[in-house]
Structures are given as C-alpha cells and as structure tokens.
Length: 378
Length: 262
Image 1 (cartoon, rainbow over the protein chains, first blue to last red):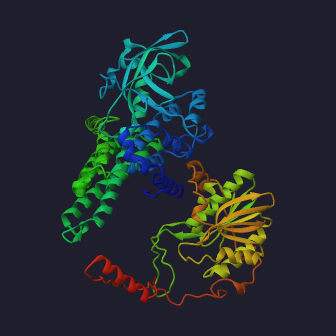
Image 2 (tube, rainbow over the protein chains, first blue to last red; image 1 turned 180 degrees about the horizontal axis):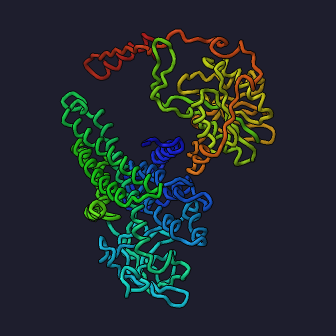
Image 3 (tube, rainbow over the protein chains, first blue to last red; image 1 turned 135 degrees about the vertical axis):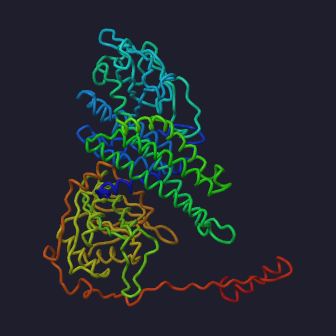
C-alpha cells in the first residue's frame, strides 16, 4: 500500500492551487451568472499544460496520468465546478485517440489538444439515448471515401466551442450496437451545426449544447478504431471519464468544506464562534470523513487504470460515492452558512447546484449502481 | 545575458513559530516554499533570458530538502541549479551566508546579472543580497521594481518610500527584487515532471569552494540569536467626552498636539 503523492505530483497540486486562486476563483461567480464558456481560462490551462495531462510528451503532451488529472480537476473544482468540467470533459477525446486512434490521428490531434489550446468534446447522448446508450439513432453511412452523418446529439458539454468532436453513430444500423462507430467531426464541416444552448441549473459556464448533423460529410480517415467498435470505445471512454467526474465532485466537496471551516471560525453566534457548537462540529466530522472516503476511492480507481488492471467497478463506485458526497457536503455546508449560504454573495448555493450534475452526467447514480451490482454479482 | 538567482527555501507561513529554548525556527509540519520575493527574482531573470537569450542559474544554500525549491525554479525555466550543502555551513547568519554564496559565485565565473529577493519572510533581514554584492565588489541596486538591460548596463527603477529612483549600473550588478517587479509564472505541468524526473541538481560542499572556514557556520557568524519572543502589544483606548462635535474635535486636537502627534 502506498498513499503518497510523488514530489512532482505535490508540485502540480501546488501549481493548480495557485492557478485556481489567480485565474479561476475570481471569475467563478460571474461565469455562473452569464453562463459564458471560459475560453480565456481554457487557453491558460493549455499554456500551463493542464489540457495535455495524460498525453505523452512525444505527442506534445505534458506527460502524467490519471492521478495528475484528478489532482488538477479537483483543485479547479474547489473554486469553480464549471471550469473543472470543461477541462475534465475535454480530456476524454485525447484519451480516446491515444487508445484507439491511428498514428496519423495521434499526430494530428494530440498536440493540438495539449498545448495547442484546441477544445474537444464527446458526443454520445441523444434525446432518446441517455442512460440507454444503445438507443442511438444517429447514422453515418459510407459513401465512397466519406461517411454521411445524420442525427442529433444533445447535452454535449463544450460542444459549441469544440474544434473536434468524437461522435458516435451507426455505420450499420442493421447491426444495432455492433454497428456503432466513433468518428471525429471537425468544427465547420458542412452539415454540422449547433442547436439549442441549454440553460442549466449548475456548471452553467460549461456550455451544454445540441449538435445537429444534416448530411454532414466526414472523411473516412476520421473513423476512430474499426467500424462497429463504437460501443467498446464509448464504454472505455466513460470508465475513464467517471474518474474525472469523481474528481469534480471531490473538488466541489473539498471546496465547500474549506469555505465552511473558514466561516465557522469567523462567524460568531451566542457570543462564540460556530466552532464552539458541537452540533455543527458533528456535521463537519461527517463532511470530512465522507470527503476522505471519496478522495481515496477516486485515487484508487485512477491507480488501477494506470496499472492496466480492470477498474470499471472501482471507477463506478468512486463516481457514485464522490457525487453523493458532493451533494451531501454542499448541502450541509450551505446549512451551516444559514441565510448567508442561501444568498449569491457566498459561493455555497452555486456549489450545491454544481454538485448536482455529478450525480447525473457520465451515468446517473442509479446506472452506476447497476454497473457496480453487475460487477459484484458476476 | 547570463543571470544567477540566489533563492531561499522558507516555511510557508506568515506566522513563523520559534522554539523558545533554542531560538531557532520550528520547521516540522510546515510546508516549505520558495521565498516570495525570490520568485520575483527568478521571474526577473527568466524574462531577461527570454528577451535577450543566455542562461539562468539558480542557487541556494540549505539542507537536502532545499532541492525542492531548486526543482521548482527549474520547472519555471531555470537552466542550471546548484545546492550549497555542508555541515560546516549550518547555523550561518547573513554574513556567513553571503560569504559562502560569494565563493560559489566566484566558482561559477562570469555573470552579467545577479538577482536576489529583497528579503526572506522568515528572517526579514534583507542583508544577504547587499552583503553578497560587497563581497563580490560589484554594484548593487535594491528594491528593483523594473529592470531594463541596455547594452552594457542596466536601468533599474528602485522603489523608495517617498518616490522611485531611476538608477543605472554597469554589469555585473546585484539586484534585489520586490513583489512589484513582476508576477512570477506558474510552471507548465511538463516542466514540473521534467524538473523532478529528468533534471540534475549539482551539490557543492566546502571541498568545492575556496572559503576561510573561520568566516562561516555558527562559529563564523557575528550575529547570534540570544532569545526570540513575540512582543506584547498593549492597546489602550479613550473616549473623548464633550457636548458638541466641535468641542470634542477641539479636545482631541489638544490631546494630539500635547503628545506631539500633530
């Protein structure tokens, strides 16, 4: 057993903390209000190598692995769930290319995704294919050296900002899931447009949109993996992405606890600081214990992934537990802040709204229980 | 344009705890950082390197753990890092520290700019940089808030309480950096990983330097800490009584003038 971070990982955390204080925290409340995608912050994240974590140096990346991803995403999420989400979601595309892409695709996309500052998105969900990912209707039928893409994807984080999107579509509708394939669609391809921009409860600046494909011609070379490999690629990507959501949830919970500790030391009621009230201290103990649990489950799942061991169950558990923890902790943190917590002058109500999505996206808590039970009972 | 930056690793706290018996700093459990002004010094040197080329060498004196500060400086972009570490250096005051640094800088050889931070947050002496310049017999400009290299000289805007000074000096020159000089960059993740996994730090001991052993370490230090304590601050307040605001103001003015405060 080894629960230690390396010296480099500690310095990456310290850098992510300073980055967050300097560039992310001051914008968090305004981004929540406007819902504007933080492009400038994203460019800064690229310049500091955050977007390139997990991409090997030979492809222009920062190196590092899922541990470093969790470190950076959770540090960002302490102050701004939306900014953390933009990075976490962006990291899915390069992971897919790295694992399933051709050498040409790696050379083309990975440097751009790392320091290049290009933004990417992952498009699986459709209006009638949420938790039931197998119900995808979008098609990509072969026409010479192109695929003709038709259909609508919804709830795509950063989809309107992305330079490249990995889209899941049926190349052979007669085969159902076995006919599902992954294709890279570039911004500006004829027939590709952005539909509705969602008005969300939380992580408002992550910009969630509808993507519309109307006879969009995608070059055959943009196919990732083989035809029919789409479902496997999607599920593999989601296993990794779940660690990312666990990191977001962990960070939001950690941030809410930090706010609470600060507030309880400053706020005086009945002639004493709130820290003198045992009832509230018990809340703090519960919050801190659940966070500790979420933290090590998240890093444990990331460690298994790095080692190349099966981690589907652990990633599902980490995501399910961390997201439940985030809502539990932000709820109590807001409660401890009382009326001030309910006001927008304090960040607690935003954190609670941001926490909610972690129970829903990249698989709901309920779907995760299905995944976990299936693994336990097999 | 080659620069050397002298940095110090300090405990990351504004409330430095002191062992009352020994008068030394309690470092246990306190994370260490690069002294804040020294980060401005590193950034100052890196900016000049980016503009004019050359190298940046970062140097510190301290125990093995001070390598972390050097690795951070390399992650920021320093090309070379040197740790001065020897039991004989332990307990050095500012005089002895500057003596050791001067010997190391002599060994490094030709340099154009030497950057130090204004002062360290643990000792607050602001002496090492100026002493180093004296030992090296080169000009110095402290409290630098702007540095411009012009051919064979530097033009430095020096912060002053009653106004800034614009000064010129030939090189080599020693400058001490203040917070206003710049905003230190945060390192790139790849640079952090490289600094820890691929870069080497040179370690120099007494054997590598030409130093008079009587001038360094605890015994060679002219200053000694006899006792450290937190001064007790006593505050007293008094409410001026009077019938009208005018009367109260007059009484307050009398009181202030009698104590020669106005």
